[in-house]
Length: 375
Image (cartoon, rainbow, N blue to C red; front, top):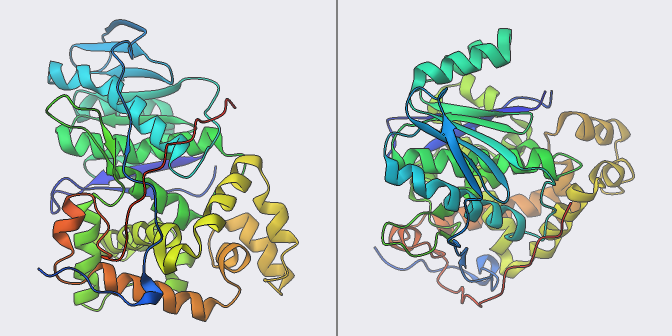
């Protein structure tokens, strides 16, 4: 069973956090040339077509009035309290799916529709969780507000419009990756991408849902606080940890873990003048085609054969960084640290809130999203 779970912490505004279980939730920033961003795609806008809903029938097991909705890529079981919010969710999830399949793609879209449950409240969610996970349910039930993804099925409950949307986007990536990628990504990358996908934002004025991965003020704020308070997790430790290990040291540690993983994806995508962008895309394609394990086993960048074997089995550590991005880990870490300091500088928050890169040298260049191939 492959399971991820998410918790929403009331101490942060509109913020969700995902924990992954092992495979079985001022002034403009001035930067040096070394941390200039590449010219990335402009924010992707996923149009919501009027006929996103293919069919809709009543759903009576969600703890309140609900509907079972079929869209192109989802089987949605929705019992959220607000009818208008409930009606907007099919289009939102289709926009999320578009981001998953094209933002670092094209990636294969699962051939079967994805199952997503959003219960009306915690009580029916708990009942479903106990029934489905049995003895394993306890760890999820003890985490407070949130949800989880298990074997490609996401199970959430209504915790308010903004938080529910953020969890749905985050868990939706886990759901997509479980069913789309033939080889799982390293844990730090899987969680970082889930946080990156939280940048899918639903608008209230009826305009199309937009994907702006920088627009994640909660992750950025936690990153900034960690920098100011000198509690960043060293990169080697970050790559070697799991969310569970971080949670054992407290929720603050977990929040920092997610914020750094989020920032690391931005670094790989845009940092150092785009130095690692194409390598990131290659890694995603290798995951989709099931080639990561073979590349790690035959890696010349990882001298120790035991380390190569462990990298495939555990999904933690710096092996993927050494093989795909930079065999000089010290140099890579130095680049990453400069990027973090630039992103977290005073005055970056306004740009983050607008969904723009805080790196002032970046000049977005529009690019049409790739059309994802069928799986």
